[in-house]
Length: 275
Image (tube, rainbow, N blue to C red):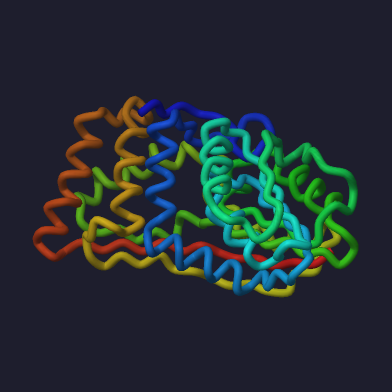
């Protein structure tokens, strides 16, 4: 798997993992875990899409959420997804082409700071774990507002990485690995400023909520198990973390899992706002 740095959602100077086909499949597997399936359900419950609505998925990734939203807006609705990763777009298109979609679903290469849609195109927009990767976040929010109809709503989910609790590895080693991992983000603490930013672009924030990804055991189908592999492949050569040190960190977590002393928790913060 090749891990480099790109801007997934759009805007310059953003840092995010870029995946070849193998890497995209790993992300697909991560998004198939019960933790992320439950997060998508929580997201859709809050957004409350209605039949006939049009919705934009900013940074649509492997297409899971877009496919699920199609079932809610129905044949008179529409779902559009954008992503800057060609591998992710191909995966999303493949996934939806194999399903009997309840609504038209389309995907295209796109930049969150320059959305390829006319003004007032959508009833709703979602951005899940994307804005924290974008340097020009204000431009992205301005664009989201532009393409929403009057009264349209935006749902944003992002992580504050200060909420991470991860036990099982040597604390000093873990701190160095996770500090290097933070380089894959532009803003690891974006949720703390999102209310102010949304209001400054004419949105009324109606809902704040939090989803805790909680893995108190080292099970193979958990989010944190998949995250370990991503981190281990990304951090070598960053902040003096070697591949050997990254491997040792991973092995320590594995041993903690076998000993019953493993624990992982991470908060995702949700904002629902109306134009």
